[in-house]
Length: 214
Image (tube, rainbow, N blue to C red; front, top):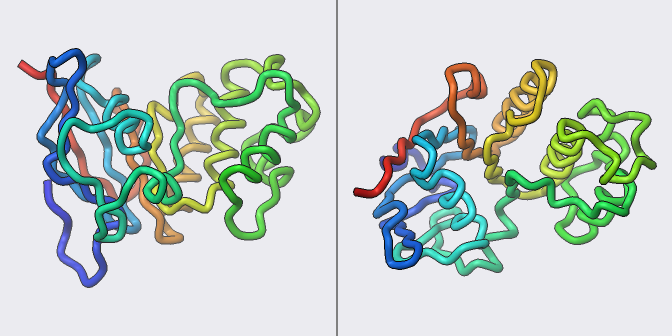
C-alpha cells in the first residue's frame, strides 16, 4: 500500500516495518501511508499483529526494522508520539482519580486541542454527571467513553484506535463514528483495528490486511 498522489506528504508513513517476538516474525515488512482526511482500517485474524502494529507506531514497542515518518520526515519515538493519540484495549486511567480529574491530568501531560474543555468533552461522550465518579467505579463502557474523551481532547493529528467499538452499545458505536468523521473533516487521520462488517467508520477509508506470519 502506498500513499495517494497529492501535494502534501501523508500524515503517517511506514516503510519496511517489521516486528518479531522471541525471534518469531509477527508482521512485516509493511509499507503503508495514511493521508489527512483518511482512515486506514487494519484487519486480520486474531494473532495477525493488529494490536502490535499500533503499539509499535505509538512507540510502546520497538520495531525490528523499518522507518516511521510523520509529515514525510522519519521520526524518533519521542517526536512521533506527539503526533499520535493512542487508544488501546486498557483504559489508561488512574483508578483512584475522578473521571474529570483523569482528563485534567492527561491534558496536562499530553496537551489539549483547541478550546474544548475536559468537562465539555465528558458531556460530548455521554458522561455528564460522572465528573466526580472515581474511574474504578465506572463500567467498562463508561471507561471506554472516558478514554474516547481523552482522544478527542488530544492535539495529535493521527489517532491510533485499537478496537474502539469494544464494550460499547449502539449509541457508543455511533459516537466513535461521529468522532472519527469530525477528526477527518478537520484534517486529521485515523488507524482503526477492527473486525466485523459493522465496525468501520463511514468515512474515506483504505484497508490494510494483516496475515499471520508463516
